[in-house]
Amino acid sequence: MTTTDWPSSHPYPRPDSPPLLSPAEAEHTLDVWLVPKFSMLTLVCLLEPLRVANRFGRDLFAWRLLSSDGEPVMASNGVRIDVDGRLAEVTEADWYQGIASSGRLMVVSSYEPEAMVTVDDLLLLKRLSAYGVWLGGLDTAPFILARAGVMEGYPVALHWESVPAFREEFPGLEVRPDSYVWEGARLTGSGGSASIDMMLEWVTTLYGPALAEAVGRQIMHSRPQGDGHAADHIDPVDNPGAGGGLPRPVLKALAVMEANLTQALSIPDVCRLAGLSQRQLTRRFMAEFGETPKQCYLNMRLDQAQRMLADSRMTVTAAAVAVGFTHLAHFSRAYRRRFGEAPSVTARRGLGPGGRQDS
Image (cartoon, rainbow, N blue to C red; front, side):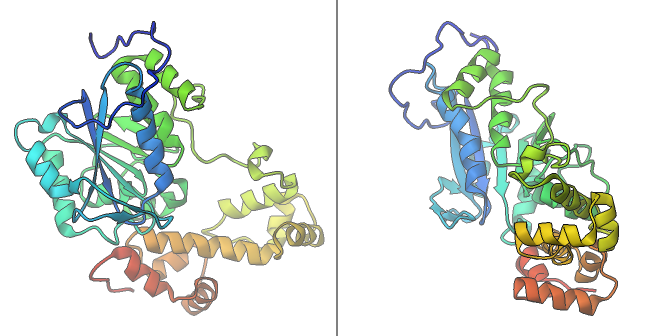
């Protein structure tokens, strides 16, 4: 049987849950490097389609969870996950012995993606790339891949919140507004539930659409129409239902604010673009959020700055300018009020061991 003719005559999974497979038992193995504070949702959506695919009569997929030091890793929700080994040991044992071209490594991270990544980790990724290993990164992991220098010439997709910081730090890389991008030996994506569609595409590539559709039905997931690369961030103005029932003028005002974080508009300008008077918009915001439009807009800009400082090597000054502050002292005071720490503390923690010099 080739890898593209899974038999559609077996539409139901076997009743027993198949055992967890070793790489020697499975036709394909995915190694997953978990970076501390990774997203549990992303991990589950990454692996469950593979587990379910194994229920349809064959031992197709195995996976191994890895960490930099071989110790358990804590997810962003506080759950500690055991791993199968240390990243360098597994890769050196399996991928450097003449089978590197069949290796697949997916990096999964979320908050402060570079905080626990060492220079040795980055050098390892670069060596794996040279050996022809297929590399992927989800959520904020594209920062790690780009820092290792293995994304040149490849488009990138990542969580939409991190796109501004990524573009600022890696202006030479193409960022696409897709939930995932798969070209050649690189696969990057926004993470979260979009990882299900990404893995179903992998199943489709290996075994055809019949198996992918069967897996999707089993996990109660409907695949999007089109090419499967739909943008992960929905415009609330064009899709009012995406805003959880907020009034359309409020959604439009939020969209205006979000689109103008770099050069902050005046509140009267926001009101004009939203089609409401300042008194009307203030009343709507107080009813929905318990804060004025000015407070909400300021918090959105500060949240953007926090993501930039945590996710990239941007300096405090650059982050302040990037969200429309002209006075660094004003930015620092507002930031400390919102997050309970100076922006320089966030910047050092996000960069990881060793800290950095700010400017």
